Length: 224
Ligand SMILES: C[S@@+](CC[C@H](N)C(=O)[O-])C[C@H]1O[C@@H](n2cnc3c(N)ncnc32)[C@H](O)[C@@H]1O
Image: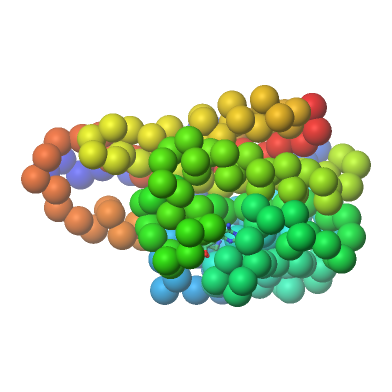
């Protein structure tokens, strides 16, 4: 098998950014001391940390906290973080889950990649949405709920990747981007391609041919 080439990243222009290494490509082989790598579908904390250092929010919301990676990054940066998860009984698609914590100026959202990993048996869990349209409809409700609690100039970051179901590719980031724009959000910046190191699927052998996806995509939205 031909090994993947070891390449360096393109040079980034000099800007006044307080996080100059934060570009449209996020490549970090380490996950950092945040959250738990044992939680299926977990991502490392460095992209979250870079975004928080860049946008400098005072109050962060993670509506799908999983093992709490975002919460751990916020603790390190001493930023107030409100988080919830369906497995603790809080449905991010239910507006009543958002009552009482006031406005937030940054949302970090790392939803299930639809049915790629089944998280539980709860019918309200996004991983149990019975169809792609049902998944996108619920994601649109979650986005709207987050938008309602978003302070002026606040940002909503969504990290998600595509995958194939029965041989048909599901371009989840593009479909969510289209829904978000439809409901009055707009990309605040370039999409960020996050290299997926340590992916479970990267260690598998398949007896069919396809082009493996080695990244997911982070989209950052603001009010249009
Ligand atoms: C990709 S994982 C998030 C992993 C997380 N970033 C971490 O630090 O481990 C997706 C999470 O979304 C949660 N989830 C799915 N549907 C939800 C819903 N309707 N409301 C709240 N959480 C939900 C799942 O329970 C799961 O923990």
